[in-house]
Length: 55
Image 1 (cartoon, rainbow, N blue to C red):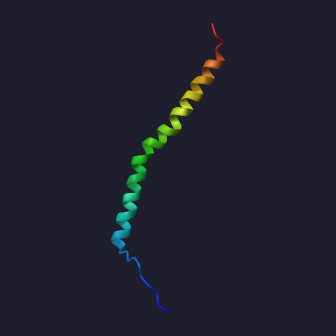
Image 2: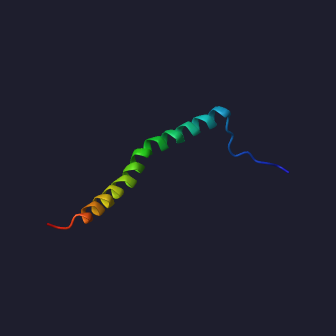
Image 3: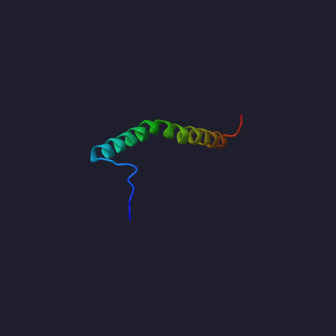
């Protein structure tokens, strides 16, 4: 059998790639927190406003 090697990765290449992926997720964490936090904050505000009847 003949196995073709399309890609070759060294140990340094793999470490560099995983470090880059880690940086991407670290940078995206702020956007993820905003995407979850803003709707949650509006939901909590709406629930608190319903506790007090209109004056």
